Amino acid sequence: MKSCPQCGRSYPDSDTFCETDGAMLVAGGAARAASPAPSHPGGDGEGGAIECPTCGGRAEPGEVICNYCGTRLVAEGEPPAAAMPGTAQMGVSERLPPAAGRTGPREFGDEAAYAQTPAEEEGEPSAGRRLAGFLGYIIAAIVALAAGIWLAIHLSGHHGEAPPTAPVAQASPSPGPALQAPSLTLARNQQVTVKGADLAGALQRDPASARAVFDANHDALLDTYKHALEGNAGLRDGMVVRLHVLPDGGVAGGAVIVSTTPNPSLDAEVVTAMSGWKFPAVSGGATDVDYPLIFASGPGDIGALEADLSTRLGARAPGEMPEYAISPSPAVAAATPAPLAPPPPPAALATPSGPSPAELRRERRRREKVASAPRPARPAVPPLGDRVSEALRGERRFGRVRAYVSPGGLVTLTGTVFDSSAKSAAERKARNVSGVTSVVNNLTTETSQWAANQAAIQAALQAAGLTGVTAKVIGHACYLSGSVKTDLDRQRAVTVAVGAAPVKVESNLINVNPGFFGF
View 1 (cartoon, one colour):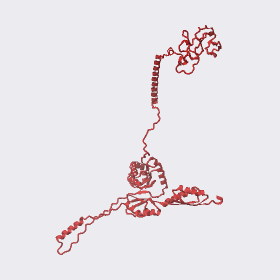
View 2: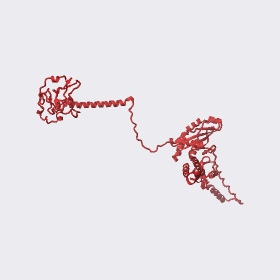
View 3: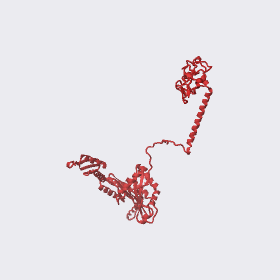
View 4: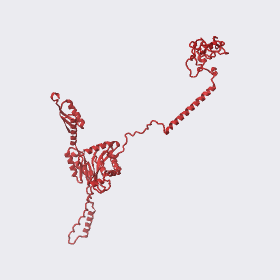
């Protein structure tokens, strides 16, 4: 058991302080049996307890600091607190500076935390402590710096790899739209085909050897396309070119079977360039080699061109004439006019005595003058293309027709005329020009375009369930007639027609006939 030395109250051995007066408990009755300490000024002498001169609190013998207010208690041989000048008037914080980091009220049993050195009691800081603190700060900074350097070296050399860093966006000049390089490839959805005049020729000239010839001449053909881009920067095309290859490997002619963008100028340049290719000689007959070519201004155009070329090739009717063709013919030597024979000498004047010397001199001078006189120049013959264009301009209905002339007298007609009759007339007009050997008629007619638009509108009306409506297209105007059950269907027919073809509904003559009981 423990007991309080002040009030004598008993406590279990596990308690330390008295709940009544806060005195430290002692084992048994040792405190009571101990001889009382001599009384000190300011104490009551009871049990040797010391009374604080400031707050009146009681302290055990040997305690230096008051557990309630922190005032330094008077020890033996020291003058009482009242005798110390200014002690009674000084505050608690002035009499005992708190330890570093200690704030708030003092609690019982915290004497060690608030203990002061003699130098602090006298108000004089220790120079040794200041120097030790400064050296400790420097040592701590050096240790922290060395630890940081070691950590950086460790991280940079971890597994022999640099620590991952976030990607840094590099500023690059913005040139606007990305420049795309033109390209020439074979269509991926079409194959190079070889058709032989006989079985032996077809077997000896296979698609693999035809592709090898294309690869050998790829760059030269690409240069032809780049040259065409100088005049038309947006030019792109997909075409199937057929070459007629002789057994000795030479090309006897070429043609553009079908293309996505009819362009006679590019067709002529491509066929002319490919006509100079040289194939390996074979023992069989002549063969026809078809190349599906894609001329793209950039990689993004290849897929669309391949799909368009496949669609146009599938829609081509058997036996349909090619869009462009060239057949080299043997050179015909131009007929040179025969030199004019010198005029015959005039018949000698029959005189009884013959010509006199003076007459002979005059005759000689006349002949010399005639011989030295310049002959009239032969009129220059206009080029074949100018003569064909001049013949077409003679009729107003051919005002939108253009003619392209290829070597050998081949004329290709492009443009638009009104109907098929005008298309045939334009072809006859071109064939009648001297020097034209053949004509490729690529003219389109307005009536055929009207018919195509009309068929498209009619199909769209049928699909929309408007089976009683009929469409008639003339130019860009559409005329609707027939009958429907509701006024809503009448208006819907106009929307379907405009969406199916580039036309404008000029007249809507559709009747609304609800039928029996409105059904």
